[in-house]
Image (tube, rainbow, N blue to C red; front, top):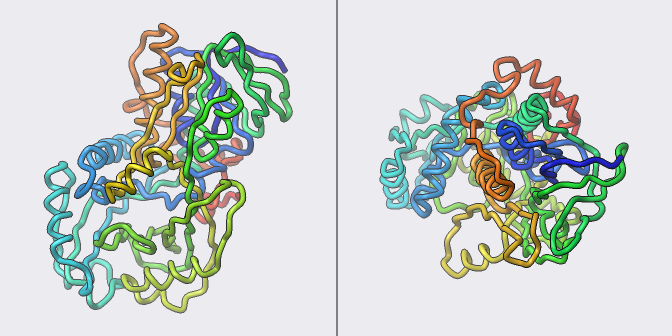
Length: 409
């Protein structure tokens, strides 16, 4: 296969498919390549929380505002890709009450709907909560089913003319006269894809792809474990109301809950330790909020790798901040035209990340047209069965929601 396209997007996670969709809706001819099935990387191995921004409100006002805006958009456009569970930030007896008060005030400052419940009221709403629950903040968190989200986003892109090529790994970038002009790909359609612009949306693997063009995109990926346990009766996302740390979130998944997560720096996003101790730590920590988890058998556990950008992580360490944004890297600054990388970010903000990339690429190509992805609903948004057919079609089944979609990752 040798073909041409206006834009080649490399990476079939939420951000990559979001970029393809946004560009296609603006009339750009776009092709997306993913080395495996869609959502096979970080997206499909996340805890799947649609953040309200409350997690970040007290230390990253801009990030919190971005989250609540995207939360509202995704609930509108994504339908059954989202379970609008709500969320609770839970203060236990051992947690700092001042931190709770600061979190509450910050949520209200960032226009995040936040209501306080007493411990008794919280346990009436969620009987599984620990007896020493003192207060909770109720916020509009929700749960994302990433396999459905990515498959529906890819279907929308295809409906508007994009070519979506799963199981098509890029083995080299084509570089001519100081520009990236396409890629060589393997798979059923092996050959060359030539493009006016190439977007690196490979997340934790961005450093590897950029290196094929002689560019250093310094990534600092970290792995984190998610632990699924059969447990009925928890409806909202539960967050421990303390500074972000290991084992501070319980995510409802129908008759299961997913516990998360750890953060361990890794050298290779394809090769890292999967330590049973991390699994045990998740159960022990989360059992402080939900004592009934103690002693339960683990149904499944999976690890994901966060696409953290090393310069941001260095600054974050120096400032002791846990804020993580996204970064659009125009490699014309590195002397290579026609090539852009998008790194960092969160699943909640993937659509906004895609919009930023599409704005940049359209400006580079001289294409007019405004973003419409915040208004047009995704295919199958009102029919879970249709969404799950799309998951199967795009081979987007992933560990994060295999219990819901019945897709085998």
